Structures are given as C-alpha cells and as structure tokens.
Amino acid sequence: MQQYTEDEIIQRLHDPAEQRDAFAQVVKLYGEKLYWQIRRMVLSHDDANDLLQNTFLKAWTSIDLFRGDAKLATWLYKIALNECITFLNHQRAMNNVSIDDTDVFLLEQLRSDDYFDGDDLQLKLQKAILMLPEKQRIVFTMKYYDNMKYEQISEIVGTTVGALKASYHHAVKKVEEFLTKDI
Image (cartoon, rainbow, N blue to C red; front, side):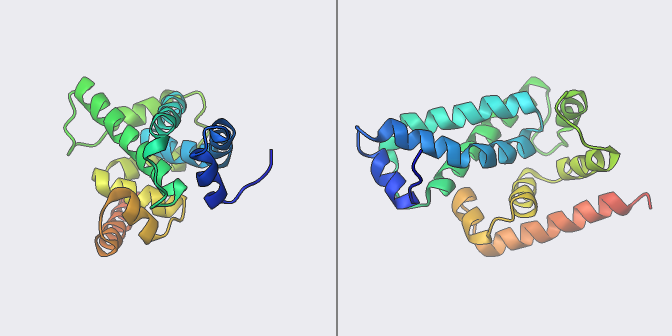
C-alpha cells in the first residue's frame, strides 16, 4: 500500500473512487494508537476492540462531514473519546456508580482480563488513575502515555491549554500521592 501524506489522505477520502483505499490507510495508520488510547480508558481488551470498531464505523459513516479543519488524528481521537465516555457512562449506569465515584468495576474487569499482563505495580498505577476525576483521567492518559501536546488535547477535549495543564498537574500529584502512601 502506497504511503500518502495526511493532506493526500484527506483529499482521497473525499474522492468516491479513492475513498475505500484511503480509509483502509487511515485504519492502518491510526488503529493501534487509537486502540491503546481506548484501552487505557476502558481497561478491557475486548471492550477496547469493540470501541475501536465503533470509532472507525462512526468515522466512516461521517467521513463526508470531515472538512479537514482539524488533523485527522485529532478528529479520530475525539470520536474515540466520545465513544469511551458513552460506554463508561453506560457501564456506570449498569453498575449504579455515579460519575464522581471511583470506577472500581473497571479495575475488576482489568484483573479478570486475560490480556492484562501487568504486575502488581501496574495494577496499582491503574487503580491510582481510576481514582482521578474523569477529566483529569483523560488528560493524564493522553499526556502521560501518548505524550500528546496540550494543544492537541485541547482540540480533542475542548478545554483551554491552561486548564489542561492544571488538570494534568493535579492528576500527577494525586497519582504520586496514591503510589507513595504505603511507602
């Protein structure tokens, strides 16, 4: 498969004759990155795969609405984030958990996930992240794991860079406190 620049891919996405091949390249380019971002939000391999498929399905069905004002990756991350939030809200409702409570049910899913190969320290880090308020958790995972720039996170979540920096700072402090409280 020939490699194209993002501008060329976007151009091909709007050409009916090129659209399928261009979208296949989008999936190839962004599939793994999106999978890991989703997985860090929902923790379960199977749920992450389902949400990744939903993300690409939504992107495909709304490709005509993508104008190229934002980067393709930003648009895809925004769709994936919305899919994750919808999924997590549904899970919270099914488990009678308020948005302000810790999503302990996610940690239990992670423990029972056959694909989780982390040790006790990784499990403790995940628990610390789950203790964060949702907005801080989102910012923390995007910045800590994916090393995204604040400007890109800002475009995805629709929050100012200054607010994101503050959220990340508070999240880091809470995670550090949680990880070191037994030491």
